Length: 161
Image (cartoon, rainbow, N blue to C red; front, side):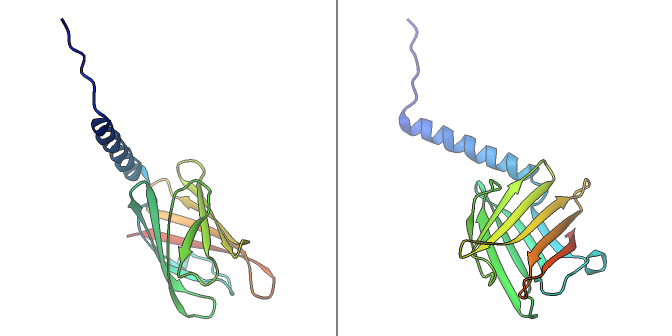
């Protein structure tokens, strides 16, 4: 007579947790955006009235991504912001950014992220973030409205550290 082996609920939970952590590790290994990025001002076309993100760090945080930005605002004041969420196009809270309280990222293909910000429910900056084929640079095309209501765009190039 053969005995069937049945896993307990606790064992199923442990197996599920293991599979999710492996899936998260595989996803993180494939995410070319992860790492530290420094602004290359010589290759960038900055726009007056927009913040300058000097350093951007993407780090895996479980099944989410944490994006930390250090830079200067449109008045030259230093700022530090943090966002943790998924590349699913949904709004997640951002802290430390005087121009936004929510941010959403959406993956479009393997090398392009679309990002949008909101402040008090009102749309703010949009950005198209493209990772180079070799994974050594990312180019961010930013569209926003400055304090006077004028549409501005900028192209910022970042080098992976």
